Amino acid sequence: MLSELGWINDLLLAVMALMLAGMTLISRNRHQAVVLFMAFGLVLSLAWVRLQAPDLALAEAAIGAGLTGVMLLLALNKGAPNSTTQPSAQPSAQPPAKHSAAQPKPFSVSPMAVLTLALLALLAAAMISAALPALQAASSPAEAVSIPAQVMAHLPQTGVSNPVTAVLLNYRAYDTLLEIAVLLAAVLGILAISPPLALAKPGSVAVMSLMRWLVPLLVLLGGYLLWIGAKAPGGAFQAGAVWAGAASLLYLNGALERRLLHWSSWRWALVAGIGVFLISIGLGQAMGLEVLQWLPSWASWQILLIEAAATFSVAAALSIAVFGSLAGLDPSGSSNQQTSGGKHG
Amino acid sequence: MVSLTIYASSGIILFCLGLAAVLLRRALFDQLLALNICGAGLFLLMVTLARSPLDNGELTAPDPILHALVLTGIVVAVSATALGLAILRGLAAQTDGAKHHNPQQAGSP
Image (tube, rainbow over all chains, first blue to last red; front, side, top):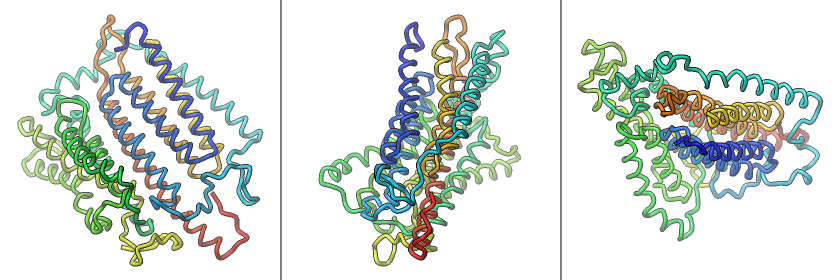
């Protein structure tokens, strides 16, 4: 893939990514900044493809560009999908020339700022000159590729044939366990401090009829990504992100069932991932294995089970992250933005 | 080889751009966005380092451990962003409440 003239592709992608990131950071209109950030995420996922990281490309496009962008846009609308409440403390779409006296300038322009930029440019130059020799490393091929060679050598015993899945759920299963726990912790934090959920008005006819076939297709796609993760790029996180995308689509168009708008409907999904993981560890220990050791004969089914449970967990957690809260509905049915961190639900 | 240099340099520059924005922007929302860009730059650097150098002109397989670490990083970054946005929303709600009681206080970003 990195053919003779392929570096032109890479140069164009890198320049686009840098320009998009720069425009995102300098932009004074927050909506524009978020949309530019989503474009940056998509360009980055193309870069992952060029760097032979298709798992990461899937994850970045779904999670980094898609779900993060939706989350940020919803946060700009004060959490209500079709909100008509005016933005108060955060200036969103007002041009800065019209700001009132109380709003500070978005940038601090001062000698300190210039010094900071100069130091960061120096840091960038130092890091680049330090990183470049690492890319030309490999004095002898054996010592340069020792770890990946070990990973590939023991791949048949891991139960899967996709090396990234093998690393995630076998070699470094501890990291994945803690990653799912971190996701759960973030969701608990969100549930604890969020006001009640805001209802969305139903979408237009075009969107609703699009959703009628798109949502089942997304569910199928997520299931496929989960199943194929053992052999090809895919896996629990990508599948969970696709399912979360489907749930967000339903939520934003007011098509989620009412009882799904309370956190009590989601709690089993939220704990499924870490629960199945811990039960697997417990069963392994009861059979005399070490912690996080999978028997090679069972490993593929065990990994599939853990991945399936993790997909539900990741989908639930990312959906709640997009919704912004799931603390139940206000009895009056309207979004209650004035209470500070209401303890509902 | 040129490609790897391009990607590694742009990853580092992305990180520094994001860090500059975190230090120089005043609003929390913009700083959160800049932190995401910092993370993206770091991921780009890590995935570039995962590509082992061309071995006799053939492409060797990339290092899967760094890929798994970056995948974990992407998921943790989105959950941290979600929690950060929830905190921002709570702060804004509290600030709204304060402004209604005390009109002299400016809304703090």
